[in-house]
Image (cartoon, rainbow, N blue to C red; front, side, top):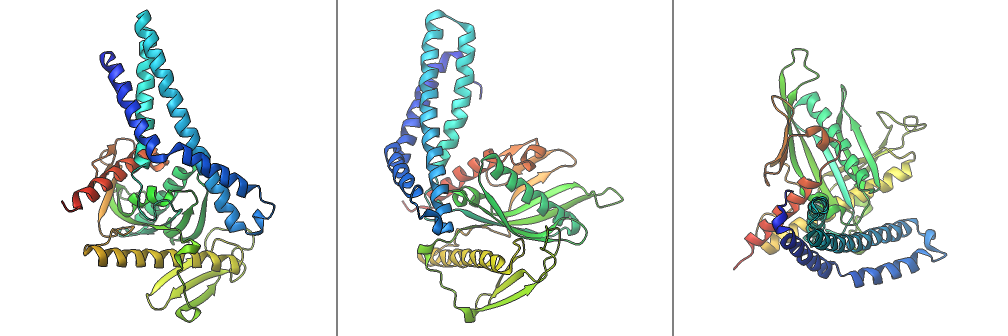
Length: 375
């Protein structure tokens, strides 16, 4: 962001005001109290007797530590920039002024990203996320696009050091994926990624067309909050049909040699979930049940919201609405159709550089929510 020398002091003051507001919302003292409690839980000798609980505790502790380090680091960086600005002005040092300008640009980006986090106030926003990607219209190009999106989100998570687990990948016959389901195991992953739900559109010269024609293809992204024990989503056994079959597609030793893949059909709703990426049938069944419960929770949430608000539910994924276009021919551009956020570097986006799109989407969603409130 370009910053003129004359308004460095004003910019620094505005950044200080914004950061103070963020510190008030995130409450550093409360975060430190949370850290102390989590550290106590993490050192309990019986912690790993319940592996799922242990993973939640350690993941939450890592997240709180990151939040504290981020807040403290930004405050220190801002204070240092103000001192440097005062010295630059006192000594009339052009080199130091240029350094102040670079610091202000970096702080503006970092504080803006952190401010976006404070907008995640939904009931399920702090949850981990389940993401499902499905190839839409466009044949083999759509299947290839679905695989590109899977890699994009996994690379985004990797950039942020968020653990992921792929539950299911259904490969298409010629290339790419029919569908994939994976988890992002980090606090606020759902609130952050839920803005990605919807229909994505790719325009390019098809690598699968021997005449080199331009092809438009589509893929759907669905984002769900991970179910927690407090959600009480009970699924009676008599409402389930469970089928086992042999896993297909690439896999490690034993993946394709036994009937370890599991397909669960929830009879009352018709929801079907498959999981085949674990080695044992028991592991695949447990993973598939987690995905099914997340879908049922989202269905319940949408129904409750629709009833209470009398409006179309703000569900995690509007499959019929195009939300982003990725154009590789005749020009290079990725554009979000809701926020107007765009870039001329699709390669970076497909490599997981999504933060500007996600931040813009969260801010857009907040504006929509405020605009829809009465009075």
